Length: 337
Image (cartoon, rainbow, N blue to C red; front, side, top):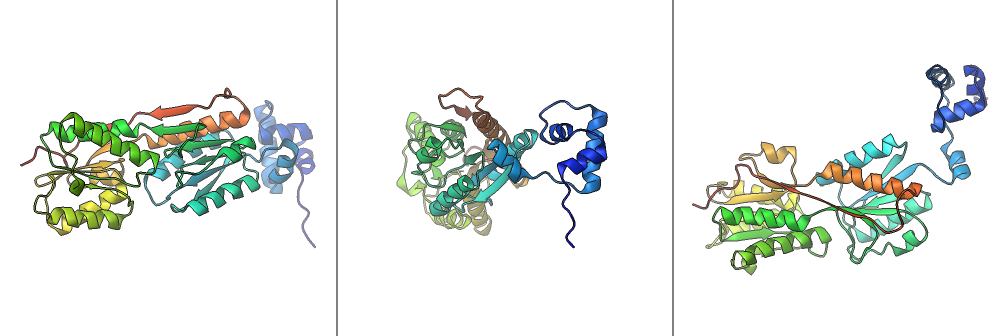
């Protein structure tokens, strides 16, 4: 015989309260006295009762779930974003579904369609495809907030960091130390984040009247091996740079590996600036100078904006939020020898 699945009526009977009180405790739709709420909780535990969210979603039109689409879950930046987003989601009684696209535009579109098909209440997305069109889902009143990476021409809700300013300040820091041969390792410049970092770097170089040499500028890849291969190439060059700015942490990992294998000292021979701040950057020897993004706060604000949009608490015009990065100067940068 199959064991009968407990119902809300069973919980109400055991707790000696009304079904409306049980519903109020579960859905937090009304204030219930602590004593009654405790009786309901104990009854639910005793009966091993779990609310039927599918039935509830059919009644309310909401599933209390939010999707987060990430371009690369192995990038340490994104777990920090997720942490901030989940804090806000859970505080507002939403569950989170994580989707990793692995930098595959086709997979990204597939994940977006799956979340829509499963009636997610909304989506946070860090775009892999810079040309991804979100016009269709938003017209279907499917709330979407872009974070970090913003697709071309997108005019909807977004939260990002001022990547232009971050790269500009990092390059200025190296210039003020006296560096003139500054190499740049930047990711895919068709993505909004890396294009902004490239432009910020170039502005600082132009203002200082320093040449932007093709032999010192590399873009397109965002893998550890790419940073490693470029590192070996630069370190073996007869006129190697005295400083390098890596705008992606995977590129940075590859580059510092090449430095170690080539027995090139930092910062004695080459000063290094990275992007994003994690435990390994501060504990790396020498401690790395980086442009730090407020990753957790970015996730928090993106989720807050999305929940407001889901609940209809945001005015009709889209909201674009830009957070400030911070240059954290440590021991990996010094004046050229």
